[in-house]
Image 1 (cartoon, rainbow, N blue to C red):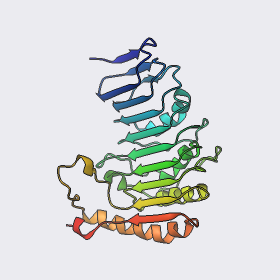
Image 2 (image 1 turned 90 degrees about the horizontal axis):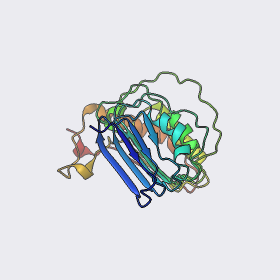
Image 3 (image 1 turned 90 degrees about the vertical axis):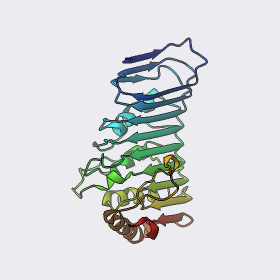
Image 4 (image 1 turned 45 degrees about the vertical axis):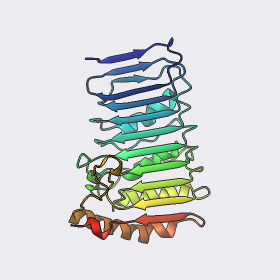
Length: 266
């Protein structure tokens, strides 16, 4: 079993590294100077380095069993991959609040944060804490936040005082999409923060209250049957959008919100 991977500098033609289903891998050190994309799918790494490469533009990470992936990436990746343009994070065990980030993602244009899947979530996740991560994305143009069905289990505990924003991110944001939009108060606050911070650049925002459905990998083109709790939460989420989000939409910004269709209800 491979527990450590080290790629030397002499592989100067290496552009893409993909590591999938890594259950025992502990350390990754990539020194290839022209690496443009890194895709990792597996368990948490104890050590991760891209060496001196300034060419890495795309980073995709799906990590299982790591409760602080967003915190780790926010604190380390801006220095590991300073020229990153596309970042996709997928986590099913996220527990910690996203931290205030001291370094900026100077060139990041496209960000996807996929939270959880099928009951693997932590109750009480503070969606608004993601605002600190977004604040560090000073060149961001597209933001997508898919919230899988399990993340609907949250509570309404009071939030610890949030640190002040320091970077002025979201001023270039053009498009924002949140799917699996639930009735969490902190998610409404995050959405309003996006509208407020990106008021001068935002063109379109989509809020979909139906649970995220992975139709690309399904054997059928039919929607998954939704339960009563899904329907009730979708209705509450739609109410929150109309009551608290829609009045905050700046002039010139197109807001589109979707809910469950009748055919998806048993």
